[in-house]
Image (cartoon, rainbow, N blue to C red; front, side, top):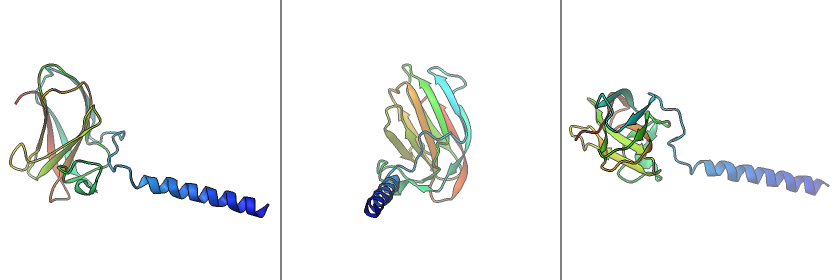
Amino acid sequence: MKSLASSTMTSVVLSACFALGGVGYASAQNVNGTPTFGRATLTAGFTPDPHRVNVYAGGSIDVYKDTSLPAACVGAIASAPDYSVTYTAGSLPLVFRTLSNADTTLVINGPDGRWYCDDDSYGDGDAQVRFQNPQNGRYDIWVGALGVTGANATLLVTETP
């Protein structure tokens, strides 16, 4: 009887170890997390354009070390998205930009489940991710900080070049 109990206990402990070990391989970004600075539902042709959101860029996750993201992703971000946009597409592109006195980055999980990232495409340390033919659905957005712990920033969502 002791060997059965011992065997059962060993199985339980090993199962728990394997389950906990798997947690370490999950992405640090929580796409199901509640967006820290809110969410919006936008339809092509939305006004005002640009849609502006004040955010605090940065966080404790070093994006560069997260192997689940594309190599182009850099900066420090939070676990939960900073903002989420549910978008109904039309014929216009959908563009996400940052404005800040600090060097900011963008990490976006698109409706297709793919990751899109940028650093400096909008110039002067600001990021831009452009969807030329955007899909309908949810865009979860992280505004990262590069070279600083965090910084005030503005996220712009626009359909204009």
